[in-house]
Amino acid sequence: NPATSPTPKNTVDNPATSPTSNAVATLPEKLDELSKLTKIREGCKVEVKIDPKHQKYEATKGAIEGIVDFERQEGVVFATKIHGLDSQFVQMIQCICLFTQAYNRKVNYDIIIFSTLPISEEWQKQIREVAGQAKVIVVVDEKTLEQQLRELSEEQLQALIQRC
Image (tube, rainbow, N blue to C red):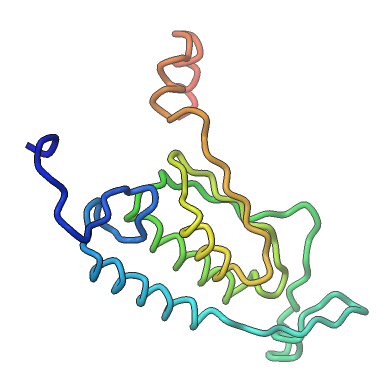
């Protein structure tokens, strides 16, 4: 019975604050996961020189004839949604790292992460580290999807079903 079983020594069992992919992980497993994340972060460090005159990024300038340089567009953000489960944080860090390396390091769009569950400061720090110079904004939903669906009137629910 999990409610009466004692928590083993050297474990972390809070999924909102643990950077491991399991709800309960030993301290060595947690350290191993942090080591893996550090290696991912190290691969994400990129320096990009900006030509202030044209706001174009030298990283792609003239690389291949006929390819247009990346140009920052106003009012654009990168937005994503997770449920805030531990298993999703490593994937989120990898996603933002790849997005940053492939594209966002040249335009630095803000990154907005919507999450059903709170994201610990430790995870937010790691996400910001792989995001480069981009501003990272974390927004925690006030209600889960299930709660929002339960609060819909019958007419609203039918309209939603029709749209889907």
